[in-house]
Image (tube, rainbow, N blue to C red; front, side, top):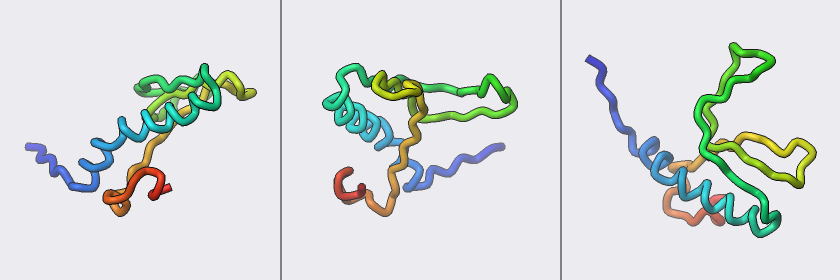
Length: 88
């Protein structure tokens, strides 16, 4: 049997991930209207198909030379009682 232990720090990170991603997206959309954050699943590097990542989002920013990038969100448990702005 596989027992899964839900650690409070992991639970916190999962609960806050969507909120953090939304705040990030809204802030950058104020600077660039066409900025978009998409859902992401497993991303495989086409040049090295044995390398993969599971990012928290895919970012499209048409103002950048390389308009596509990946997003990884971190919500440290240590900062759980602070706003996102205070934690940054």
